[in-house]
Structure formats: C-alpha cells, structure tokens
Amino acid sequence: MHVYYVYILTNKNHTVLYIGRTKQLKVRLIQHKNNSIKTFTGRYNVYKLVYFETTKYINNAIKRERQLKKWNREWKINLINGLNPDWKDLSEYI
Image 1 (cartoon, helix red, strand yellow):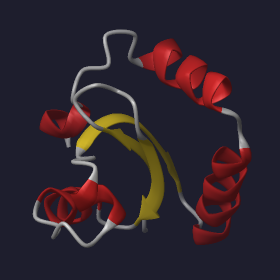
Image 2 (tube, rainbow, N blue to C red):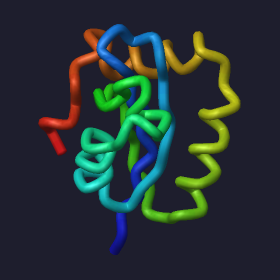
Image 3 (tube, rainbow, N blue to C red):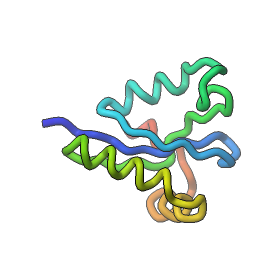
Image 4 (cartoon, rainbow, N blue to C red):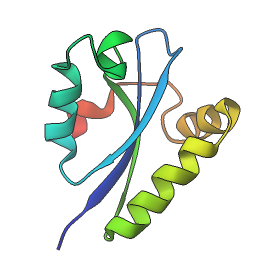
C-alpha cells in the first residue's frame, strides 16, 4: 500500500510557504534542501517542514494540495499552528 504526503515548507523567517505533494517525503525533502537557486524553494531557502498529512490515494493528495494552495495565508498559518504551534522542523520525524 502506498502513502502519499501533502506538505508545507517554510523558510527560517516563516515569510514564505510552499505546498507540495509526494509519495516519498524523505527523498523530496532532501531534494528541496539540495535545490539550486533557480527554483522557488532554492531561491527563498524554503526547506523547513512545518506541516504534513497523509492519504492512501493519489487523487486525494492532488485534491488536497490544490485546495491548500487556494487557501489564504491566514488559513494556512492556522492549519500549521493547530498541529505545530512552535513551527518546529518536522523533517527529523520522517
């Protein structure tokens, strides 16, 4: 059985939020951390995992990613604060 992840990354100042989805979160986080400056996450040093959720089905992950991307910033911040109020880097738990 596969597990799909929808995740939110931020930079050290929490000024930029990036939402993505993947089947291999650990691998994807390494890719983000090693990104070149030409990419969005590389340009803004967005590599701190502050939120993630899982689903069994890719269609659900795609739907949720699109939903979160449409949310305003305040809703995204409230979502993160609900599970990770200190905005700790959750990548160490993956």
